[in-house]
Length: 328
Image (cartoon, rainbow, N blue to C red; front, side, top):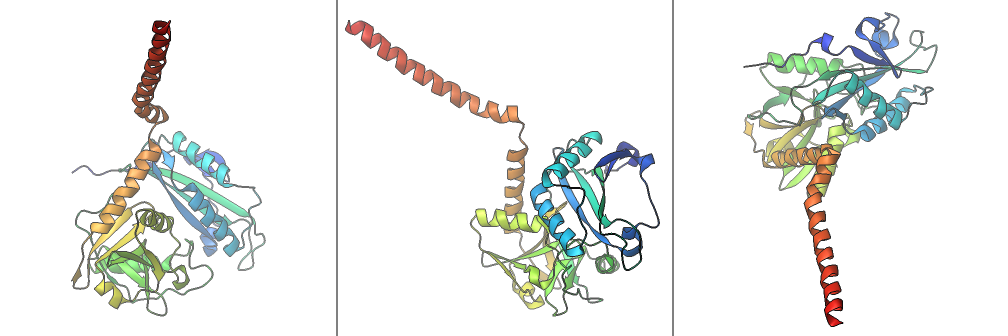
């Protein structure tokens, strides 16, 4: 079996505050507040056909994260500028199919718990992925509840903060238990997410996902899944979810920017179907294919219809002209 391998030398270019630099020029300081105090957050952007996906949704979360962390965007970074820079980052790293970009934002400057500055700094790195479109595990995932810690609900709960100890400990526990992932609860013991994904249940044909008020990360793929489901005619409810409700569900699946939709095959002694998650994943990939279709290819698709229309119009004009001539 051939395993996809990423070699750092194949992606020599990075972004630092919007400027490009090579691997050898990438600065690192042990005084960096992101390193010392986890004072910041990050975004992970999926690349398909070399194009950054859901830039608008990511920008909305970036803007909200900056405000919540009280970090000031004095670089006048905008959604448009970010999208252009990420696109160029992919091109410079020869990522023409699937890939990921990680953008790390942190508070610049020194200070200890009281920062000396609130100005923003950011670094973006890119790497290729083996799959261009979104994929799902064929056999489904096995999960269970992580009880070592609960997530505190606060003003930063919905963001991808640099402080990720809870998620790391949950993932380590899942590995020790031979599970694919661990489910995380809040202080009210409602199930809110997994170690790296948002959570959805399917019951009686409707979708249920933990409300943002209960503390999960406000995932970009979560928002995209809700939009796709609503367009497909599903009812979607944001609410509290208990372990009992998970046991009673028809389906459970997880959503993640890189992985798309991953269906859960088993939780405790319960087994699940994956009809809905499979359909939603198909709809997402169809939308990606349509969006990523080359302009010339899309134009060529409608060319025969246009040619047929021109022929019909020309034929009608010619017929009327002949009737006028014959009438004389």
